[in-house]
Amino acid sequence: MKRRQFLKTAGVGLAASAVAAPAIAQTMPEFKWRLTASWPKSLDTLYGSCETLAKYVSEATGGKFQIQVFAAGEIVPGLQVLDAVQNGTVEMGHSAQYYYIGKDPTWALFCAIPFGLNARQQNSWFYEGDGQKLIDEFSAKYNSRCLLMGNTGCQMGGWFRKEINTVDDLKGLKMRIGGWAGKTLSKLGSIPQQIAAGDIYPALEKGTIDAAEWVGPHDDEKLGFYKVAKYYYYPGWWEGGTANHLIINQAKWNELPKSYQAIVTAAAGYCNIEQQARYDGRNPAALKRLVSQGVQLRPFSPAIMEACLKASNEVNAEEAAKNPVFKKVLDSIQAYRADQYLWWQVAEYGYDSFMIRSRGRG
Ligand code: CA
Image (cartoon, rainbow, N blue to C red; front, side, top):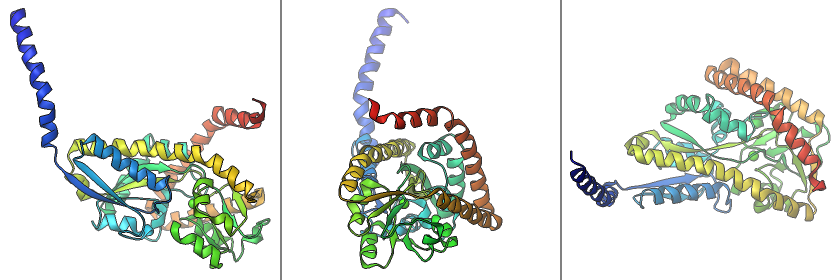
C-alpha cells in the first residue's frame, strides 16, 4: 500500500470508529433491576453502598442498566434478602451473610465469625485466597452469586445497661447480636437474639433485651442506643472485619451481557472499599460525640476475651464435626488467619502500635 493511500484509508477508519461509538451505546440492552437491602435508609454507610452501586452501574451504561434500591421492609424484611434473591422476587440484594445461619452456619464464615479475619484479611482471603471460589461453590446451591460489597472494619462490643466485669455477668443476659456469635454467647449462658437494625432500639428501650450490638460509633449513634444503655464495650470480638455482600440471582446474572457483568463486578469492588473508608472516616467524630454525651467506654476484660475464644473454638469444632462444608471453609479461614497474623505482627502491628502510642506527640 502506498503511503498516501494508507493515510487516506486510516483517516476513513478513524472517522468510522468515531461515529460508531454512539451506535454501540444505542444497541446496549436495557435492564431495570431491583435491589433489596438489609438496611434502613438512615444508615448512610450500608444503605449508601447500594446507592453508590446503582449510580456507577447507571452511569457506566449510559443509563441503560438501572438498579432501583429498596430499604429493609419495603419489599421484604431485612433478614430475608437472600430468600428474595434466591426465589427471584428481586434480581439482587445487599446483606450480611451471617443472617442466614438458620439455613446453614457456613454462611457466617463468609461474613464474620468470632475471632475471624479483620477487614484487610477478609479482602485478601476473598480476592487472593480461596474465599471467592468457596463462596461461589456454596452459593450455587442458593441460585445466587455473591460479590464482596463493603466491610465495617472491627465492630464495637455493643451497648449494655450494666457493667460486664466477669464472665458470669454474661449469664442470663438477653442480647441482640448478629450471626454466629450468638452460639458462643449461649455457651456462656446468654440469650442471644437476631434482630434487624430498625427493630433493635424499641427492644432495648422496652427492656425486651438487656444489651445490643450493631456496628460501631457512626451507625450506633444514628440508631440511638446511647439513650437507653450507657456502657459501650469493645472490641466486638465476634466481628473483627464484617464483610457485606452483593447477592445476585444466578439466572438473572447469566442474562446480563459480559460487559454489564464486568461493570457490576467493578462497581461492587469500588463500593467494597468505599464502605470501609466511610466507616473509618465517620467513626472518630461519632465516638467523640458519644463520649461527650456521657457514654462510658469499657474494654472486655482479658478473662472475658479468653472465655469467649474458648467457647467459640468449641462451637466451631462442634459444627465442623457434623458439617463438612463448614469444616472446609473454616479450615481455609484458619490457615489464612495464621499466616496473616504471622505477617501482621511484624510491620503492620509494629507501625500501628507505635503510631497509636505517639498520637499526642505530633
Ligand atoms: Ca454487629
